[in-house]
Image (cartoon, rainbow, N blue to C red):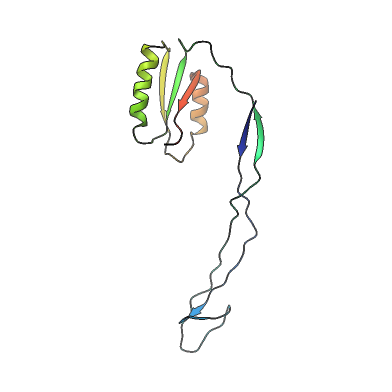
Amino acid sequence: MHTHYASRARRLPSVERRHARCLDITLGPGQFRRGVSCVEEKTTVILDPVSIPTTKKLALTPRPQSIGGLRIAVVDNTKPNFNIFMDRIEELLLSRYGVGSVSRYVKPGRTVGVAANVVAEIKAKCDFAITGLGD
């Protein structure tokens, strides 16, 4: 079994900091000096990026004995040169390993996940997927 950690950021109660400065003189909220303009009050919200991970048990699909005849999905992560690298991998998969087909998919961006409808298409049309992570 494989454990998957999904992180959700907790939003802490907002901490308000009110700032008003007049020529290096710090004033309290709503305080003004005659003849001196003050900076408007601002609110700063502080978020806690640390959260308690939730866990979910996932069963891994068994590995095939051979990839000959299988349908492969290649998901391009849009990093520089990934497509060139995967062009060569595709050639090898077809010529040396006899895979049935290679379907190419491109993510909309590096920081964006694959859309749910694309994942569903990959599941329906392919036996397994290859994607790149990191640099």
